[in-house]
Image 1 (cartoon, rainbow, N blue to C red):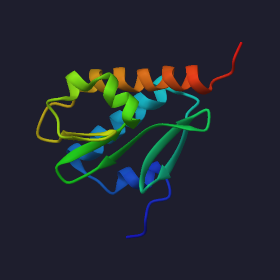
Image 2 (tube, one colour; image 1 turned 180 degrees about the vertical axis):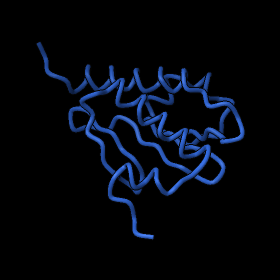
Image 3 (cartoon, rainbow, N blue to C red; image 1 turned 120 degrees about the horizontal axis):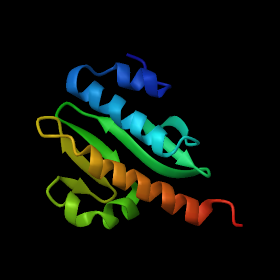
Image 4 (cartoon, one colour; image 1 turned 90 degrees about the vertical axis):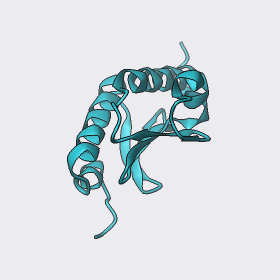
Length: 122
């Protein structure tokens, strides 16, 4: 299969729980950051605000990966400590509840962070 060139194509590669969680995640990101630029970067769905990375996500056989940059993960380190992580990444297993409210707070934090750092100064 060719590499996806859009988020729709990326998500369409998956079925079942992975597909539904990525659709939910995408809708939530676009709700919190309606002006975000959506693309494929590093082979996964990517979102930018003010031309700067906001968050990325990826589907895997056993989990959904969320990449909210190191600052997004540092801010929520205690709550994320129960999940497998890397620097700037966290894995949400498909066999466990999807912590959408936690993810919502992480994305909202990143939206506010990019706004503060890169948004128009008044």
